[in-house]
Length: 143
Image 1 (cartoon, rainbow, N blue to C red):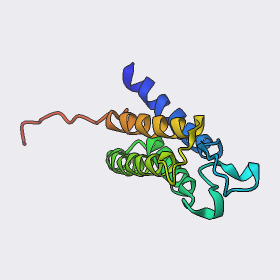
Image 2: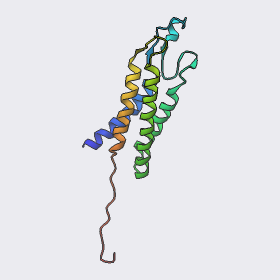
Image 3: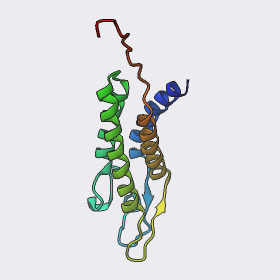
Image 4: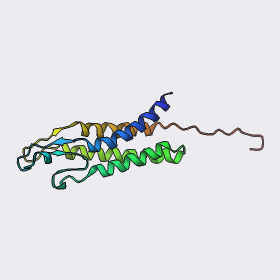
């Protein structure tokens, strides 16, 4: 019962990760950024692309993980664990990059950055406990 629940939680976490990349991650009250709309950073936007576009990597990670969650093969479950571990590492790196202070400006954290971090951690937990039924073979007298 628990593994079935974790299976669906992993699928929901994949979709949540994709959605979080489009939500606001941080707000920078930097006076050097003239346009007010440019001060809100997302997974796909940072002012003058200073922080890159981590949303591309995270969406790719979520897509690969979703495919591997749905495949009922043992190699897919093991690969999913590796992909999710890379995703958590990249999410932690992105979190530190986006919320760190610079030049006496500390950004205001928004909901997207928290959702991104929680979704990647949930994906890793769900990939550690996959729902997979293995075939058992009966031992015969000739073996």
